[in-house]
Image 1 (tube, rainbow, N blue to C red):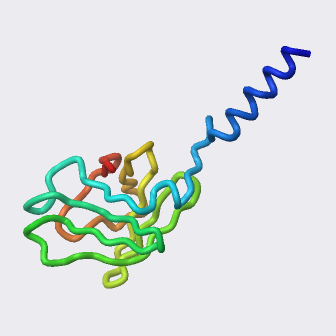
Image 2 (cartoon, rainbow, N blue to C red):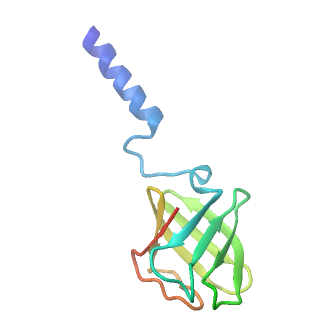
Length: 121
């Protein structure tokens, strides 16, 4: 009986903590700013995911363009859709990082991010 209770408690704790789940919710990644692991276009390249589903990114000090648009999450993938240009970029959530997915992404205007490169919170 004790063993069954212990196993049930462990399973419940694992389920509540999200242990083993790769799915992340928008609330877990929203309200954060993510910085490219490499140099941006003359400075830091950052992506800010707002809680209202909007984003902005700034490729660096030499860029005059501050991109805005909407973002969404499906399983462990974040998709950014630029509102001014037809740019769509995908990222895999990896802990506190977003890893660029080159396949089906259009990439950015001034910085060409390679598959798997990270933006860290």
